[in-house]
Length: 230
Image 1 (cartoon, rainbow, N blue to C red):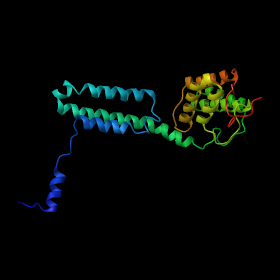
Image 2 (cartoon, rainbow, N blue to C red; image 1 turned 60 degrees about the vertical axis):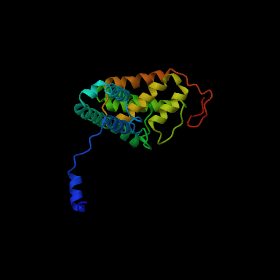
Image 3 (cartoon, rainbow, N blue to C red; image 1 turned 180 degrees about the horizontal axis):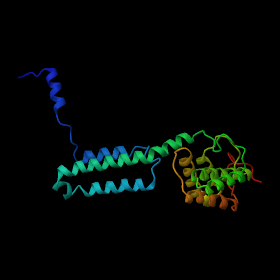
Image 4 (tube, rainbow, N blue to C red; image 1 turned 120 degrees about the vertical axis):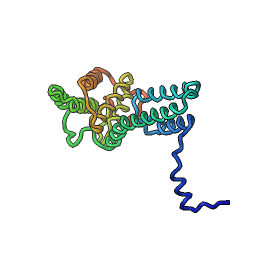
């Protein structure tokens, strides 16, 4: 029996070619990575659909497709999976960073003395100048300040945009989806350095206007976080 010295065995192991995963292994790697909770928590709908389409495509390759060309099929699967992972990181990371920065930071910033009309004027001025990020931020602030002035929610430092959307959604049920979208946009623009458009500003401006015409329904609501209705 020939004994191979330890150093020689180590050298031989290092020279071995990397392991190429088979079809099931490659699929499992991709599924485990993209199923990480950090992606579903912040990913937009199109990315979720892209992932589902990718899984469907993998399933379709289990038949004759891979059997006809295994040397090309497996590397292609790995390449597509890696591309999806990179896309998820690029899209998701700014959103996750925005959420982390938003936690514990006051919506109004350093100056919380401006009233709702003041914020609306600031937003309109920014919009006139084509400064859509500032217009979006100040218009959302106007919406929040207006709810405080109407004694719908209490005045509280450190309240996040998500908390505002959740609270107002409890009493303005028909506007819940729009409130959630506005809160996500506010966080992405203010904390995630995302750009904004004229339609982004207009969507929040119309939401602010619509809420002014709606009567809050406090029926069955505990008053934690709400001002005492008048």
